[in-house]
Image 1: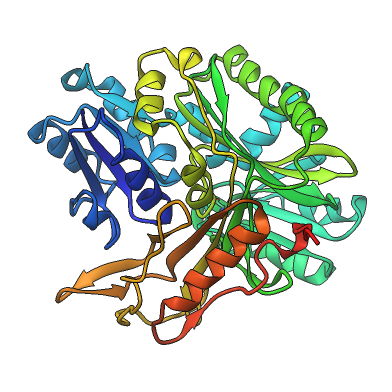
Image 2: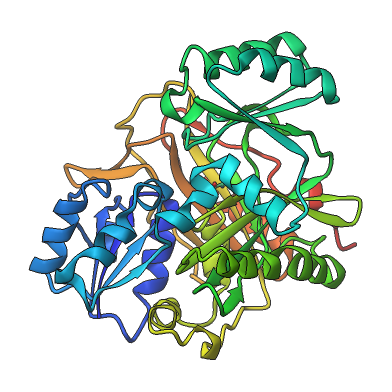
Length: 431
Ligand code: GLY
């Protein structure tokens, strides 16, 4: 099978790494990819948002399966584009069409979906441009901290949580009146704050059958102690120690099954990942948000734990045989620490030479996944804010973290920055 994978982050390197182990794979192409995917696949200089260029590439290279990594092409309708095309009758596309991707593409849509299907989530109210006065008045009805979310995709800048009333009001003004986030902020959702601990659940579904991947927890703030600005994710662990049988059952019965039934009831087609951002309040799960793809850096800890063949999973999904797929997970723990460019998530420079990549451990103990990297004059250099995900695998979280940090310390580039406390909040030390 010839496969084209769209994307260029750590998630796509982790997917490419796992796909490249499949006996079903003939050729793997990654567009645009990074210096890591280049070592195991053919990188293709294509913009995933340029559907007609992707279309031409697929036809010229006899691609059988298209896997969409990031959310933007899904929300923009790449799956619909290929489903509607008479030239691609046999192409398997992994990812939901636009109607399903709206679970991530519109916060208002997702909240209304949850309300309709009695899925536990925070109370909310939506306001559009022209309703600034009503939005500000609504703040009187809720207790701080105020949670304000732009309706659309906003590259990690769309969620503001603040205790400060003034800041909440100026955020509403910026989004609704001053178009600070463009189209994404012309509608906002104001939510009641929920106090608890976050965890994510990953489900592969064709809209009827489903398989559940290991739980994961990511660390979104830039600095130790969950301080500083939000990032795409500074590290992750999987599975999460506090996801015990009771919490898993509650998540399954109150959230996962109602979500899949809800999609069916609403005639929303789906063929890919539902990534459910959860918060555990007391002992109960609530949905913070839905995403329509795998997480990054969650992929860098989940995929190394997958014993079974990822391409076989996608093939089963594409051919309506997901219920028969035998999903097997290693009885191990994975942790990843993201090495970032100094200044990230603000301004940072690129093009710094990366050293130490040759000292890799056995793949059963650790893997370095590339994110913002590229090859320049035969050397691997930094090319983004999140540069490398250093994944450690072990018997338990403590060993996984130890291996992950050993890798993180063995790699160098100027202005390297990383969190030192990934996993510490949930680590139960064995003495
Ligand atoms: N790590 C969060 C995300 O992928 O959206």
